[in-house]
Image 1 (cartoon, helix red, strand yellow):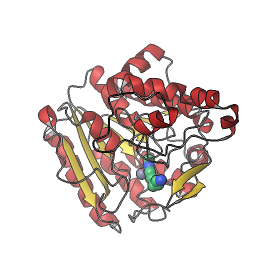
Image 2 (cartoon, rainbow, N blue to C red; image 1 turned 45 degrees about the vertical axis):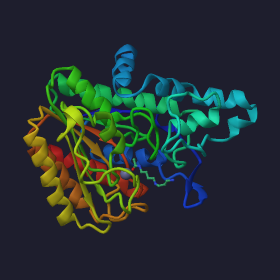
Image 3 (cartoon, rainbow, N blue to C red; image 1 turned 135 degrees about the vertical axis):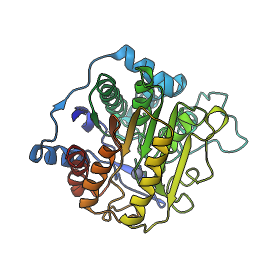
Image 4 (cartoon, rainbow, N blue to C red; image 1 turned 45 degrees about the horizontal axis):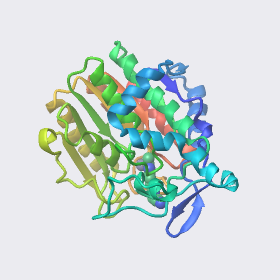
Length: 348
Ligand code: Q9C
Ligand code: ZN
């Protein structure tokens, strides 16, 4: 397994997120990846490598899944914020106003506060000085992993944070800014795979990935997640979302109630993998969140550490070339064991 690690992952290190009416310490922290790296030092399932330098290729791939005005905004957001008031340099950026139904999204506002609301969907995903650098390097890891698999590797892992699966064509949220799984899928398509599938096993619905590919039939999106009637991101992820236009039938949501056991979860995984096979996907992207863990502080499924070994084994049995991207998981001390269990199970 080739592991492309984001060496800039510490640069995104925001302080506070809005949670239940209070600003609380961010759940999505650099320590999460510290634990994965520490576990990989104990169980070296693959050598760590840096992404292949290819700015032009990366920019083109990002532009295929994200809107140019969104990428431009995100790339310059911190400098704009500090230019508004030098004192802003000591504070992370959080949106506080959003355009909802009936509001104009076609007119790009001059106001910075308005634009950061236009390009986001929650107040839980602070932007700070290093956000763009960390997210972009993570995207480079996802692209390199996809290029390795396109070149014949059986599997590659993009070990990165911040995560990506909530980031859509022109919005960030859910701790995600650039959609690494979507970027990997697009890269696999651009390098020879006629049909690709994204299988999202994070606790939360992969709303960003779904939205990016909703009108396309070349990339199947499948997500197993907490039922959006009670679970974040709430406004997408229902079973009746099947895709639209050419993409009708190329999206599958498998919502499960809070409290779901490993037994039931693995049954849903079978249904997801059956859809991947029916799509005749030539390559698979796995959006790997381990917030399905029983000890996760913000989630509600009951997987245990051993279940991640089984998950890796089952993914390997699908028999497809696989790119894995690192998504959620907030039981910080256990994230390393659980992620490396998937990689080890895959290899076994
Ligand atoms: N202020 C991922 O697992 N929690 N993202 C609700 C909102 C957001 C999870 C707090 C959870 C996002 C990649
Ligand atoms: Zn999640």
